[in-house]
Image (cartoon, rainbow, N blue to C red):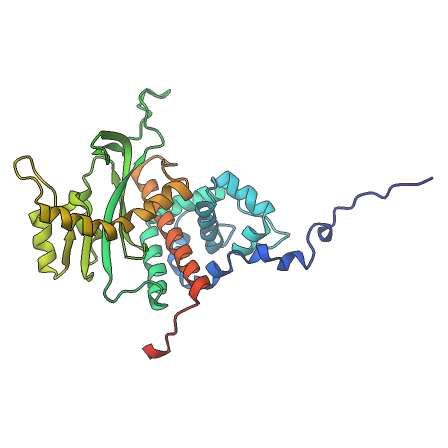
Length: 337
């Protein structure tokens, strides 16, 4: 009589040595190599000063996890599940095969700490500094393309909750703007304002309520050392022109016409020429909305959304740097010394 052997769930039945060197597990090697991640950890260390106690996972592991969540359009619950079953994710987050992984609540608390300590801007600054040091982001002769895009609020409908308070996100506002066909479009939510270089790397970013006019954030997005500023007609004003002249920044802001003073043929031609380069400022927005699934906010409140889109900016720049590394390798810096 034949007796079937029992199925033994030993680890080697699922993962072999060859599996651990499979090409699929090298998909994020360029992302790993493009940064000195140890320089990021000190920025996160201020979280240790909070009264919540030290987290059970290294802060850098949690930060890497949030980046994965952006790149792969995952909620915290989905991300935690993927960390359990995806070897690539475990490898990137430096999690051992046999160990536990962060739960969704742990990832959420870590994000809340980033909000509380307002760390996203320092993190973006450090990552950009590293990419600049490697000549992936060029600083000499760089331009600045500023623009804004509306993002619908996670709770934008009317009505009240059980406590009688409006369900609508209180920090958001109505963004009203004409589309390319001249039709007014209204969005209740936020505006993400960015300043990017010619290659689309995000240099500055901020988030406001949707009813804040694009031009209000002009000075926040200005670097001061760019050779030219590109922007659409929403930023056109005598004040803008005077400021750019004081800083010796070339004025590449599109002109706008008025009721009794329409655009001249010369200004229309100038606008068309500027539009070719200015369009590059919209590419990060397309990445946020189409690739990262951030056309609508995931959280309530300005501070949380500032951090969420700040992490998205970091994720965007890191992947751009990693792609550069894959295509061209790190630039030769021997001539700098």
